[in-house]
Amino acid sequence: MLVAPMDTSIRKLPLIYAVQRLGVNYHFEKEIEDALEAIYHENNEADNDLHTTSLRFRLLREHDFDVPCELYEASYMRVHGEDILDEAISFTTTHLTLAAATLDYPLSE
Image 1 (spheres, rainbow, N blue to C red):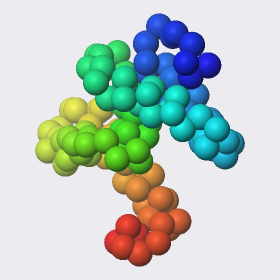
Image 2: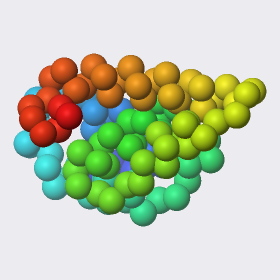
Image 3: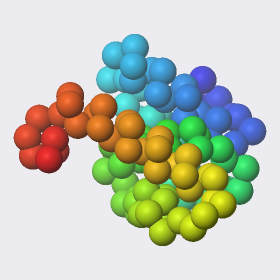
C-alpha cells in the first residue's frame, strides 16, 4: 500500500489520511514519512484539485515539512471572477474555524 508503487505519490495522500483517521499510523510511521518526503519533493501540482491541495498542505504541515501558506494567502488577493480563489477562501475559512474549536491553546488562537 504505502510502499507499493503508484502512478504518482499524490495518490498516496488519501491513504495516509485514512490510516491516520483509523488510528493505526504508528504501525506505518517510516512508510508515511518516506511517502510524504517524496510528495514534498515532487512538484507535480498541475492536476491537483482543491481537495488534494488542501490534503497535501495539511499532511505536510502536520509532519513538520516547510510548506508555504500561499494558497490561503492568495485567496485574500483575489479579484472579481476568480472563482477558484473564492472557493479556496470559503474552504479554508470553514475548515480552519472547525479545527480551531478542537485545538488547545496556543494553536486555537
